[in-house]
Amino acid sequence: KTLGIPEQNIHSRFDATRNQIRSEINWARNLSDAYGRDANLIVYYSGHGMPDESTRRAYLLPSDGIANDPESGYSLNKLYQELGEMNFNSSLVLLDACFSGMTRSGQMLTNTKGVGIRPSDEELSGNVAVFAATLGDDNAYPDEKNAHGLFTYFLLKKLQETRGDVTINDMADYVTTQVKRISVVRNNRSQMPVINYSPESTVNLSTINLLKR
Image (cartoon, rainbow, N blue to C red; front, side, top):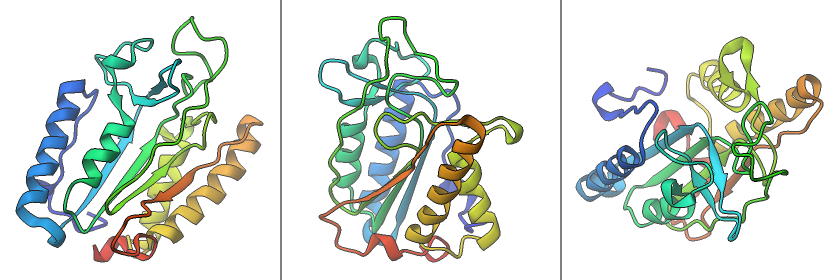
């Protein structure tokens, strides 16, 4: 409602399985073929991420995934590659997850890893921007009072306050500042969101206004 996106243009999956994630990527690809540069895409994911211990590659952990089996997850590198190949004017990925192998409470997803793993950086292509809740092996903390991740809470707060009339860069600056401050006060640990833009983008992604997409 804030961004004026028609309800039929929104697909939501709760406790998504790996095949459901694949299905939504295929839906986005079909939209890209039909609309091309006349459309923009927003992908929001809130949940667990996990690393491959041998390659340090990052994976989304679907509801039917196994925490110590990366093949059961959805490769973040594959996701970015798929989005980069699409023809949208822009694709904005919002990730409220960490990929160190830890839960929001700081516990390990499996008993096989004693410490969090710093995942490798994934390359972006096409007109893709990624705003993620954490940098490297930081934890993505919850905002238990508001039943959100800390990242998601301030993301929604900024959209509500501006009614969506905000650029990607300004939104990222606000959320990053707030999350960094609040995580230290509440958790005595740092959480640093990070914004990345594809170096191949043909548009200035940082100045895109969410309301006027």
